[in-house]
Length: 388
Image 1 (cartoon, rainbow, N blue to C red):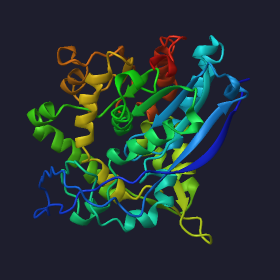
Image 2: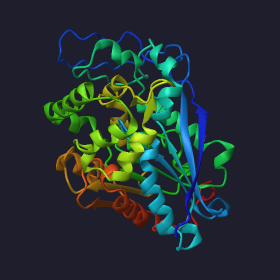
Image 3: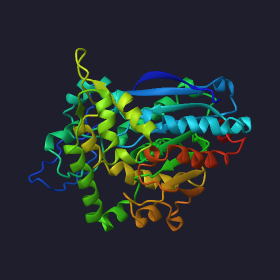
């Protein structure tokens, strides 16, 4: 019988991030305004916190040769949705050589998602400074004031970097893994390091939303339509239920949740919803619909993450995992990311059969096995210190 995971919650202070001012206004229900500025302004205040959970299995934390995995989710998700995948990874790697076993895993909430959304509720509501510096804002049927409260992956990446550089991670053989927008965030965490000082032994991108600016502009209308659909669906989606069991029944019958592994739907109900008041059983999404909607047009960080992939890929093994169903991104999107002629040479590119963009929700066990295949290629002699 597999050893159950030990789970410990944490809250970390995230670093301040500089913000843009004077966001252009939108004058129509569907318009696109691109804002590119590098104006030095005051740091955002108040700062945001990042919530996380640490996962170990038995005495896995004592294995200093083992791997430490860091997980980042996508838009509209939360850290606990990784748990079925994490559990299967621990189980699969447990019988392998100690350097391929899992020492511990950490899963992080984006600062406006999951538990972090509740912790940062007041701070997010009061953020009138604008969005993170250098962010391109694409307005897709989103009310103007929503964008004044957004949290880009530019703000998530520094929080993860601060964790990686903390005393807690000294001596760890770290592998970041990101899904969707979380892939871009994890890729951006390498940007602050010289190639000789990268703090990771490998990096795994799962259905990444990374793309070059040139490819985005070449397929501009297609990309905008896709974002508009995501934003529109989020704006009108139900977000309150009379109790958790009704929420589970309702979600299980509706797209896209009915395509998910039932364990992940249950985690959404138990961990992604909160009780609206002590005297009521009514529950609502922790991630406010507005916060989710304004996260979809956050594209500039993904452009930069794609550039960063080309910089580090010859030094750091980067693996890419897709689903076989191109329900979100067409072939040109995927092919562009791993275009070797543009210097983006990945260690491997694999696919999870029968899964789409939401592979971590739909096929968590199959995804875990693909991740394990990548982990098994990591050299036992490769560590952060060996790069120094």
